[in-house]
Every structure is written in C-alpha cells, then in structure tokens.
Length: 118
Image (cartoon, rainbow, N blue to C red; front, top):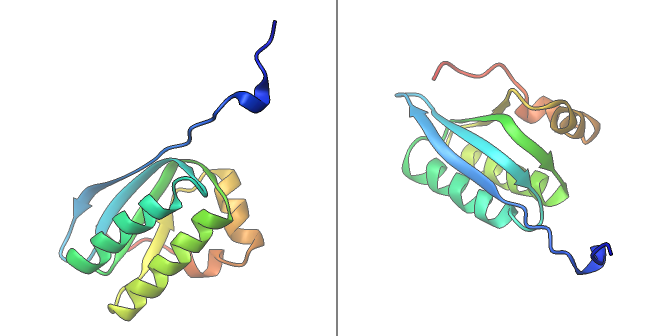
C-alpha cells in the first residue's frame, strides 16, 4: 500500500556558507532549495555577510537546485541592502532552472554579471 502523498512532509533546506573573503568581496556558496520554507534563513545569512563583512557578495549558485518567488524576493532584498551599503550581489554558476527563472523575471541583468575577483 502506497503512503498518502498529501500526508508526506517534504522538508527543503538551504545552506549558505562563506567560502572565501577577499579585500573586495565575499564568496558565498548556496546549496539546496531556496523557497518559501528557506528564504528567511537565506536572507538573514546574506544580510549578515553584507553588513558585517563586505557589501560585495558573489553567490556561487552551482549547488542551488530550486528557487521560487520567495527566494527571488530574498535575493532582491539582499541586492537592495548591498546597494545601500555601497556594494552588489552577483550570482554565478546557476543551474539551468535557476538561470531561466532569473532570465524570465528580468533579474538576470541585475544579478548575472561577471563576478569580481574573489
């Protein structure tokens, strides 16, 4: 007998770790799913990096398997915070699905740039 799929709970997680810091920017590696369940955690981690380390953040999104509108909103808020602090947020190495989402929402021009040297 198959379990009731409606009763199954899917737990999505996101991990955001600082991989490297240079005098100009911070490299943050993001893995997992960036969605409604995880966006608040991601936004808080990113805001901490922007305000306590460097306002220029390069996000390595090669391990990001999924992103929804809540994830995009967190990314936009982080971008605005970085700009207020004199920096930028850049997304590098996104998987095709994440790159497509950024492209169809028009956010590719804001976040998909050549990353500054880390």
